[in-house]
Length: 64
Length: 385
Image (cartoon, rainbow over all chains, first blue to last red; front, top):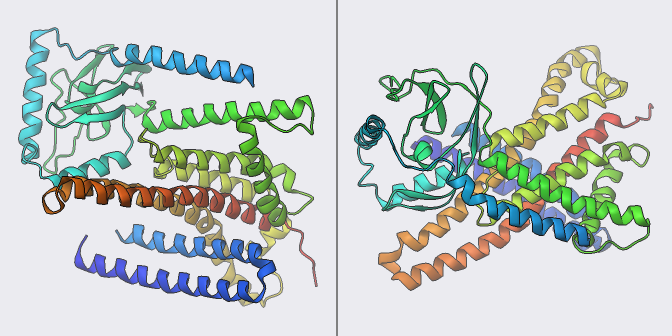
């Protein structure tokens, strides 16, 4: 991997990390507010997380 | 259940009985004098061409080994002896379509030592994962970039990945026929053995994925596909964590194929509403409809594309990291002393493998969940306001 490639990969990971953090944080808040809806919130969280992950992996593979 | 157990035992026994037969199908004995000459010159040529093949450092070895694991192979190798240049495992059949069907067993020498195989007057040589048609000397006519310029026959071999897929298919077939038989005998029976572990997963796929996403009326039609894809991915992911060394879902061709199936399911079950939302989005001004059309058409393809990339990248990344952590035991030997390096490597690998079991389930879950979500969006009845 070249240096620009590595920097790009780092940027992608930073972006994905911020996104996952926001999703996880909001899900935690939501579960704390409504513990009875924890299952549904978790499912939705995992779906959004997977979509984000797909985006990040796509960028990493296309940029390789 | 008794019959299943018996047939399983029979199958295992047959497999073990046949294994030595298969592995010795093409013995490395070279009978003719001239072919011996060919093999030795070829090996010498290979070593010469690759330059530092002999003085490969540990780092390069780990890199090459990981790359080799991630790729498909024509020889099922369980264990390789670096010093003796021996690979222990069993041969897999090579099936070539080249003026008719050419079938022969691969062998250690064919795949790793550059031996030329003769079949019905045609000569074949293995070079970096591909099979080429050559002359008797095995001349690949390499160009200046070391790429062979000779013809490549159509390769439909039972490779390592195909063998893995077949193994998974057999296991799933045995497990689910046992489950189905219990229900057939009496619908309210509690399944026994493996079926008891499978039943909650089937219910999970039905109640958590298919029903809420596709809808109570239509979910039944899609259950066979969703269940197949879920259990196939889950089992293949789990098999990838065993010492069998399989990496089927980490192969992009396999995930492309799975994504194509989802694509076909979504688009062939799409109702008029689905197509209307793609080509002529209702409820927006006409210029906007024209702008949205190409975006929506692109969206048709990006959905399965993200599915295939996600599965492929997750499994590939997981396997590379596990391989890297195992390599710590060899690379850190000097700095940490042998017990220290092995301990560190063992702890990290155990931790990561447990994590990988979660990933194995999660990826199967996500693939099925998103497939059912896409199918659901294609079959949904919209309320028109």
